Amino acid sequence: MAMLPRIPRLLQAVLTVAVIYGGFRLVFDAILGQPIPASLMTMYMFFIVAGVFMVFTFTEESAREMVVPIRALVEDPSRKPIRNLVFVLVPLAAGGLTYMKMLPSFEAPLELRSIHPAPPTTVELYGKRFDLLKLENPFRKLEKADPEKFRELVAEGGAVYIANCQYCHGDKLDGKGPYAAALNPVPLNFQDIGTIAQLQESYLFWRIATGGPGLPKEGAPWLSSMPVWQEFLEEDEIWKVILFLYDYTGHRPRSWGHE
Image (cartoon, rainbow, N blue to C red; front, side, top):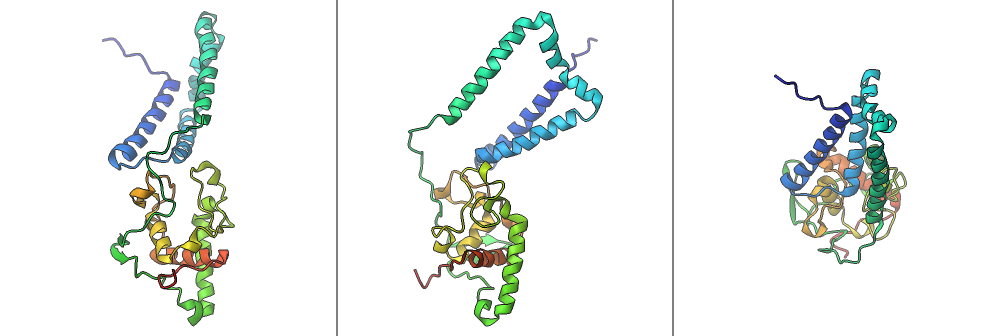
């Protein structure tokens, strides 16, 4: 019985990356029905490609096996026609892709996207239902009732923010964190008077807890890379982070009684 030809190690690595990429597309587009942001996909694939090639070159023998097809293409005189073709097509493909990415589009978007979409009246979070029209930050009352305890809560919220949020929103809350440049659209600048200063604390609680996938139709397509923080943070931690956001920026949360 004839043995099947062994797949070159370099091709194995390429196929592995392609399968993972297809899996991402299948999960988000077909199953979840939410398109993954291009910037987030780029970030994921960068780490995936790096990880796959680290695995496939883990030993010296596997690393040598990975470069066998490349060395053969570059050094084998019999492959000169193929080599010349590759050296022409690869730069052309890279240039064409760059051109298409940079080419401005004058077409109107399929639908307008609201930066601060209207929240639902009620929402289910942490296994219970909240009425966002009546929901208030449970710690806000301590600002006057117990200022010392309030400052402690603000500090705790700051610690949670630095540990989880500053990578995108920045340590100065200006939307210029170390990951911000890789995201499109960029994270919100909380220092801007047009962001949290215009919102109720209940709105922030809803947006933080539900993240990008929680955006309603007018906020679609899903152009927010923010995680669903209710899966990572406790309810009280989100409220403390909100205290910190307003305290650090000097803004006051909007209230239903003072529109």
